[in-house]
Amino acid sequence: MSEETKKYVWSQINVNFAINLVLNGVLAWLLNSSKEVIPMADILFDLTVTTLLIVFIVCVLSCAGTSKAIADGKLVSNGWQPSLGIIKRWSSIRNLWRSVLLAILMTLVLIPLLYGIFSLLGIAGISVIGYMIFKAIFAGVIAGGAAWLSNLGTLAGPSVKLEASAA
Image (cartoon, rainbow, N blue to C red; front, side, top):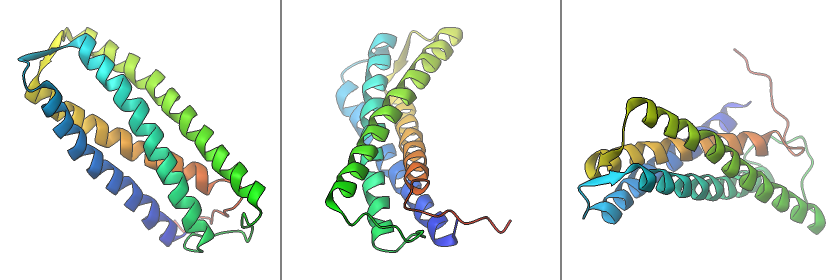
């Protein structure tokens, strides 16, 4: 992978991490500020919806941005460019399905894992401040991971040639 491509992917990860860290921390506070303790059922429901939405939205936007960067020549390409309308449509549909599948898979892995960890630790609820901090970090990490995975998926598609690392 070229240095420009690595910088592009890291910038996508960092931007998505920062935006979702702040946004979800604020949302957790606004939606739960009237409660003393947030019960586990509410937490798991909120994290399920959050994971599905964040991963789907981040993947759709990252795939579109990466595809545009490839088309604009900002990322290393093997010369094939989606110039025909049907190919562009197929590429968009492929990215949409990748986003849906990644959102479902990450949710199916992370939520039961979190439930298991919370159960093992005997956590039945979390304070609003504790949940705000947890959700902010959780959402940031999920968004950064989704950006990374979707960029790798788009970069590994037929339109990009990955260069051997010099390391």
